Length: 407
Ligand SMILES: Cc1cc2nc3c(=O)[nH]c(=O)nc-3n(C[C@H](O)[C@H](O)[C@H](O)COP(=O)(O)OP(=O)(O)OC[C@H]3O[C@@H](n4cnc5c(N)ncnc54)[C@H](O)[C@@H]3O)c2cc1C
Image 1 (cartoon, rainbow, N blue to C red):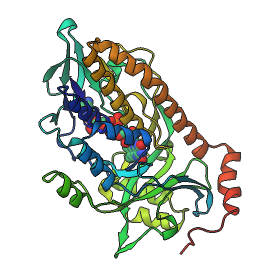
Image 2 (cartoon, rainbow, N blue to C red; image 1 turned 45 degrees about the vertical axis):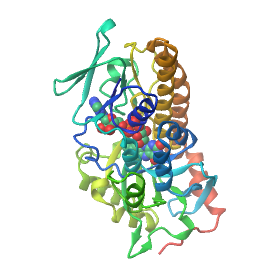
Image 3 (cartoon, helix red, strand yellow; image 1 turned 60 degrees about the vertical axis):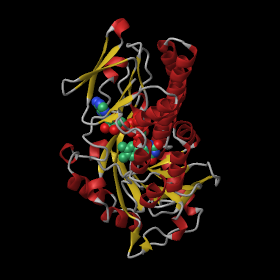
Image 4 (spheres, rainbow, N blue to C red; image 1 turned 30 degrees about the horizontal axis):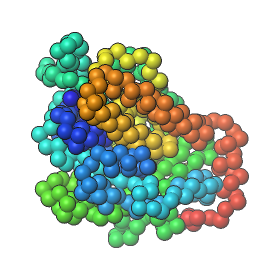
């Protein structure tokens, strides 16, 4: 079995298949595991947590929970001066929604896959050789034979045009400049106590602009936790941070700025000038090398799958704007569903093509429900419709006391 892409879903599926005794190899385009700084946190919901519980050996699952943030917390919607419009509260239970650091989770998902993840291997195409199986080809001219090929190669999937030819993602008007800033300055938290366990979406006076931030506090420091549970493995980070994103319209991001970290930071500084001073301080202390631009896109429902023993999962199929925190959870859910169907087929002697069709038939409805939800939330929170914007930024904030005094 060959998986293209060692991101969250590719590694999760590899873990699941290994536990089921299925031979699997993962081929990753990057030259090494942590070549790019993807220093953001993700919220794991019950689907993401269930996927990890089912695919990881118990000590690794516990490691993911131990290094994650405390469960529970709040998501606050505020105006640009951080006055509350409304708040969503998350449950405080052992297995409830919680934040984890993406790079730390990825490192945990790699543990035990030594010798099975191959770097510098950018997949470009899959050949159907009939009864002889499939061949996955790489940009370096190499190729591997495989019984099944899974494209887990993310939003820019190189295999999508071939496997799912009628469903390239659609662009949206919105983009996000993501970065992170240290949580502690001089030993003190830069986030006031009132927002300690809150993610905050601060909606600007001007429609089509917002600022999101949340702190990532590691439960147990990953370096110590890794040394305790999996000595010798690499903890990519250990310092608490604030992840933030300035959301703006794509047309406001000049093409020349798109690959230029300094230009992106300057753009974030300029476009956050009207927000609360806390927001401006976060932008001013950003770690430059973690800054990335994400042009939001939405996946399109596939109508045909053209290579019978090849399929796709995660963002390669159903990329969605980052509203509602469903992207990573849906990708992990896919991985376990596909793993389960493949393992069942092997145990029962069912043809693998049938297992893949079952996976696709089950995945498309829930994944595109998540895409629709995320796209709908994006429209409501950043769209130009005057009435919802007025309610969020003018009416509701007047009904609440000031949460974070300016100064
Ligand atoms: C800045 C940012 C913030 C986000 N925040 C959140 C959040 O808070 N919550 C949430 O749920 N989701 C969030 N997401 C989305 C979430 O990260 C994705 O939905 C999730 O990672 C998708 O997993 P995946 O396995 O499909 O793809 P990825 O995790 O993106 O992995 C794809 C992998 O494939 C590799 N690859 C690419 N092309 C090839 C190729 N041709 N051959 C081989 N390998 C290849 C890539 O290098 C990468 O390692 C965020 C995304 C971004 C960019």
